[in-house]
Structure formats: structure tokens, C-alpha cells
Length: 293
Image (cartoon, rainbow, N blue to C red):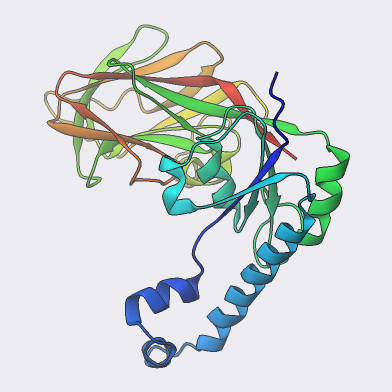
């Protein structure tokens, strides 16, 4: 058992103002860029200040005898989380999904720096609530995650969904195998396998376009939904297997017949696994779950 004091790891991403300054160099140049497009620098400055204020308040909430850490979203693939960490994600809902794939049981507190602006599905708390949540050890809600296993031992986790397809989102060629033993050679824009948390996002937009889409699972259900995007019928490729559900223990398998396919989770294309021709990936319900306060 670890004798280390808990460590609060604050996760954030660069603000819109930070991004503009990185691109344009000065506030004046950024303001001119926005003004030419009918926008105002004050708008992004206000959001920047709200994020800074929330980060300051979260930092002040950490007990004096606890350790501290901070990581930006872009650096998550290189950051090592410890088993005693408590993660505080300060930003939009997507930030919780971005960090979830790198965790294994550590609790996550989602903080919304601009209450009322974001949906607040995963970032449920204001910064002023963090001190109490850290002291009280508030109970957590478990959310189902999805995992992709490559045949070379690599694996990738996601909170919302896993995408398998061509890196440029053009047509990918592969053989799809479902848990009931059916197989089909396909050419499509890729395969999406989503959780109940992700069922209101990418999967929902696909389901709305289809009249007989499978019922989306709830966030805590040990079940996934899957969709093939824009399957293309041809003399050698079919469209029969295009959607379904995966229960716990079931997996959908994809064997690449393209030179290079990628697997990424929750929109983080920069942290992707690659499949060469002939490689297989299996996607199903993950054993690990997100513990969200």
C-alpha cells in the first residue's frame, strides 16, 4: 500500500486566446485578425480570464500536505498518472474524455470554468466546490469505457468512442467480423464503437440519419453501440453489417485490407495506433471504468 500523500493533478488545455497568440504573436495582431471577421478579442479574453480564475481557485483548494501536478491536454500521452492521484479536469466536457483513456481507477472531478456556457455533462462542478469534494471523498459514478486490442499487443481506451478507419477519413478497406460469426468485406469511412457516454455525440449523429439504429446504451451500461460510416456497395464489398450492439464480453473484429488504417479514441487523432495490411483489431467493453465524482 502506498504511503505517499495524494496528488491532485489538474488537467487543462490552452485557451482560445493562448491559441491566437501562439499563431499571431501579439494581442494587436490577434485583435486585427478577429476584427476582420466580425469578432471581438474581448470575447476570448473573458473566457481566458474565466479559465485562469478557475485554475487559481482549484489550486488554492488543494490541501497543503497534498502533492500537486499539472498537465495540458496536448501532453497527456506523455504524462504518467499514479495510483494515488486525484484528477481535476478544468474545461469543457471533452477534456474529461481526453484524460479518461490514460487513467486506471483514479477519480476525476470535472470543473466547468464557465457555468452555463457548456453542457456540463462531465464537468459538473464549479471551481469553488473542489475544496469540499477533496475533503469529503465524495462517492464516484462509474462510466463504461471502450477498448481496442491490436493483434500485436497494443491497446487503446476511450470514454466516448473508438474510431477505426483511414487516417484521412477516405475509404478504408477491411473485413468486419461480428460476435455472431458473420463476416463481410467492406469499403467505408470507418467503424465507430461508442459507449453510453458517447451515444449523445458522434454515434448519435450517425443514428439520426438511420431509421433502424440500435438503441443507445446508458452511460453505466456494460454495453456498446457500433456503426459503420458510409459503407460502399460494390461487386466485392457489402453493406449488410452496418450497426449493432456489443454486450460485455463481446467484441467486433476488423482485419485491415488497406495499407494504413488508424485507431484513435475520443477525437485525439494525434495519439493513434496504426494497422498495416493484414493486421486485426478487436473492440469491446473495457474492464476499467471511469470513476467520476
